[in-house]
Length: 145
Image (tube, rainbow, N blue to C red; front, side, top):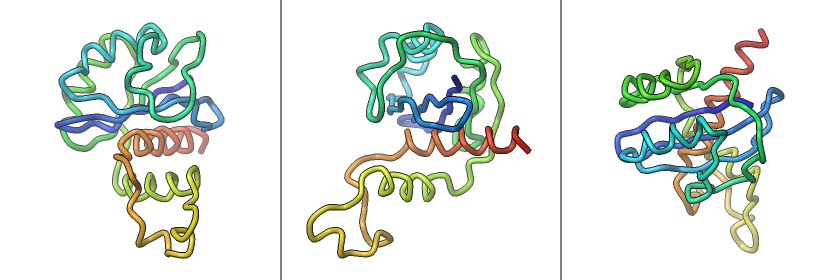
C-alpha cells in the first residue's frame, strides 16, 4: 500500500492506493491535524475514518512509501512524515485539474447536469484527496518506467 499527500496551508489531501494504482481510500485533513494524521497513518490509518471521503479503509497492512507533492508548504509535511515513513517528493503541477477530471469519472453527473460539458461543471466538494491520488499515481508510473 502507498500513501499520497497533497500538502497545503489550510488542509491537505491524502490517498491510499495499491501497487497497481487503484484508489483504496482518501480524505482531507485540516493542516493543524498533521501530526495526529501521521500517527494514525503509521498504524495503517486506524482512526482516519473521520477524514474519509472516498473508498474504504483497509483492515490491515503496512504503508510501503509516502509520495508527497512538492507544492505549498511541503517541507513541513516531509519532515513530519519522514519520522515514520520513507518519503519521496513528486511534482504536483496540474494535479488539481487531473483530480477534477477523476472526480467526474468516479461520480458522473446525473439529470440535466449530464448535458453540461464537464469543463463547465464545478465539483460539489474539495478535491485535495483526489489530487493526492494523482500524485500517488504519477509516482507509481514514474517508478514503473
